[in-house]
Amino acid sequence: GIELILRQDSGALIVLGGGDKVNSVCTGGFDLVDAEFTPQRLAELAKMDGAIVIDHDVSYILKANVHLIPDPAIQTEETGTRQRTAERVAIQTGHPAISVSEGRSSATVFTPSGRYSLQSPTTLVAQANQRINTLERFRRRLEDAEERLTRSEVGDLVTGADVVLLLQRAALVDRLGSELGRFAVELGHEGHLIQLQLTDLLEGVRDMASLVYADYVPRRRKAIDPLETLKDLPTQEIYDPVRVDTQLRLGPLDASARPRGLRALSRVPRLPDAVKDSLVDHFGDLQKMLHATVGDFDQVDGVGRARAQQLRHFFDRLLELSHAWEFTDD
Image 1 (cartoon, rainbow, N blue to C red):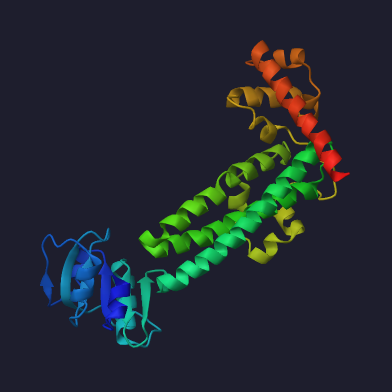
Image 2: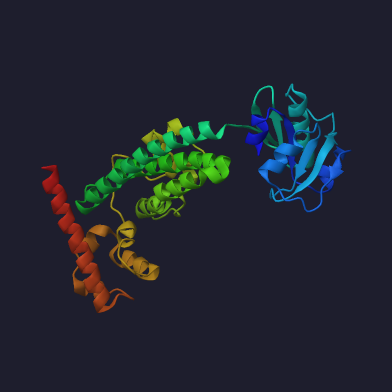
């Protein structure tokens, strides 16, 4: 609807949300009854001078051609009449207000917490596709880091730096995904394909990071969501392994480390969480599981003979893969 308004070169002032607070700043104009929202109707009503009020769900147009009179004492740094009014209305009512400027061919959303300039769909799609390509590269690097960590785990060669590297890359993928998610929201229906690609690229990233962290966090500390913990770090600090290690409190980067085996066990089909916990409690780390016999597994509560054979087969395959990795490296 905003795009149509810009095409016809007629500005607009739009409030998203009705109710008493919005009504208190409205005067004149007229109310609409059961007027379902469509982009075309919005564009036509924008040809009049007054503001338009739409319900918060953007389902119905509530008012048109109204004059907005917010409290003039509300501070604003905007210079244009529409922008000043929109910012004051957003702050006073708590509802978003959109200013569409025909002179600048731009649209700005004002909320109580700030402003956001909308971009054209063409520009957004181009930028979103560029970010998808970047996200794909970062996801491949994350998968490479996970494979290297698995190799090191099987060979009992893991250091703190290996763990931090994977968590760094997971945090970067998660951060890029959040940025791309905002593009999908702004594109609306046009962002459906981008949202599908984004969902696919982010699948399993948080679970992977959480399992890796739970594998290596010192036992005296409670496991946390590592990506949430890193969320507030500036991007440049995410690239600093010492800063990430300090934030997550994993231990010295150059120290040897052994996983408990939670991430490895998560790949065993149909293995209940209670059994995974029992295996970790019984064996203590992945190396002991890798070299345990069927009888050893059978002694763990909840495992049983059939599941013990399944576990031994899984770890045999993991050891075979480690030999294949060694051959590939040679």
